[in-house]
Amino acid sequence: GHSYGGGGSSSPLPSRKLRYGNGSMHSAAHNPMQQSPCNSFLLGGMDKRRRGAYHPRQRTLWYRIFFSTPARAVATVLIVLFLSWRYAIAPTLHSIYEWGLYLSSDGQSTQYNSKSAFLSVADDSKLKKEILKPLKELKENERLLRDSIDALRKPNVKTGAKRREAIGKIVPQWYSRNDEVHVTKKESIIERVTNNVVQSSNEKPKENSTTKESNSIDVNKARITEESEIPAQVQKVITEHKRTLLTDIQKQLDEPPPSSASIKTLHTSKVDMKNSPNSCPNDGFNLPKDLSTTLVIQCSLDRIWLLAETCNRWADPIVLVVYLPSETAKDSLQVTKAIDSIANLMANCPQMTVLPHIHIEEKNQGKGMSSYPVNAMRNKGLGAVKTSHILIMDVDLIPSADLSDVIKDNLLDQISAKNGEVPTHAMVVPAFERKVDPPCSDIETCKGYLQKDPNFLPTLFDDMKECVQEKKCIVFQSDNNWEGHHTTKTQKWLKREWYDEPSENDEQKKRTIRQIKCFDSLRYEPYVVLPWCPIASSSKPQPLTPYYDERFYGYGKNKIQHISHLRYRGIPFYVLPRSFVVHHPHPESNVKQVWNDRKKNKLHGEMDRLYGKYIDELEDEYSDVKGVVPECD
Image (cartoon, rainbow, N blue to C red):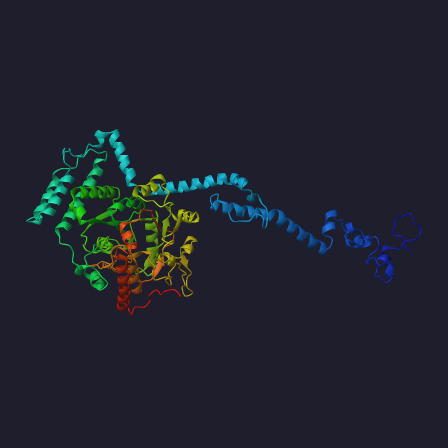
């Protein structure tokens, strides 16, 4: 046969044209495209002759091993991808995931099983803590910085008072250059006025005007000169508050107690909204400048200390109605102590108006019966509201630092969507509860939480989310009354699911806050923002939403009756984004103890029966109303 070797052969070699011509001159044994024993693995399983004809350029060794054929190329790519995922990508993703869980849990162990899928450095708890220690410090510093920025943005009355006090000590002559000359008195003016109040309550004066005139003369004659470190201007404010409170108490003691026929109920709601005196301005409001919300709060004297934190967080008006039993109002020492605590709070909370409410306990109501007039006090506070909207809360609920601003922003969005009209909507404020273990059993212990830790109560949304993740906060009363706030769907709220999808018919695709389509339970009793004073000017403005039913008193059913009234009127409910209220721990009140003790007291049974009757009255009153929020299936 032919030799394909080098030039040492004497046999004549065919020309390359004959060897690689049209093939007709070659036999099957000498077809260069067929395999031969010369195949080499490193050459990709090809005949050398085929390689020389088919690959005009030389290839590197790695290419000839891994990519010389399509099958080898596919197998090589798959193997490289598998090894990369197995030993590089998967461990890296696992470590990032574990670090994220570790950061979110603040160092607590996670539920991830390190023996399951992939191994990574995140499975080493000691190494993980060392690596993430600086990250935790950065996170804590970021939170402290954010809290400091929020504190600087808010005006702090206490800080201003301390600054004025310090200036007064450094340069007393300059600081007091404009003050009036003090008149020294052994007996403070407050005690003198209190004595007049007590005397007038025990003795029937011939003319009430004489008593009032004598009180006003005493106040105008002299100023309080009790030795105190309180700056003169602050002391002057406190004195004015005390005088106003005493005048109000005196007026209530002189007037006869209201009769049962004058209380506000469902049957009188239309007349009450039309004719009851209120403080709404006749000139209306200029939007958006005048849009604001008033906090309406009622409490007894032993809960006043809770208002300090609320005043620091809420810049809009506050109306506080304080419960004073008639025995306390008639006792000179007790009323002086009560007025001192109220006036000091008002001096540090200039946006707050305080209305004392003197209540005469009804006798023969059963042992331990409490007639705390909670709804009557709420209505009294509503009568002093001068803003477009209201938020009625209990004193133990503290607002988030941005609540008033977030309410205003969302109200403006709703008004804009209604072309300038104020919609009659109820905006639900999510409610949470700060847990402590064990619960505080006395007031001083409860006060100490915020004194020791200013961040004890969450301030903003991220703080609340973190508090819930750490199981230090829960949905308000979810551990003993899950129906009370379950409809708010707080878990969705914590995931920032705050808005409904725009409808297909909405060309502008405006987003709206989430609407509550149905109540999970008819025992739903959220805290809601409601419209109150009308925006338009009127010679006799009327409230836009109803009063509370004053037949409900004590503890239980007094708030849910108002929510039921709003629902039967066809008012829609929406959930406010971002902001919240949080419950501060406190000892159990006497009123709640009476509510829970069914054997010795009648309160629980009476309110349950009254509420059933009230629902029947609502169904009769609003039988033709459409759009009532239904109960969920």
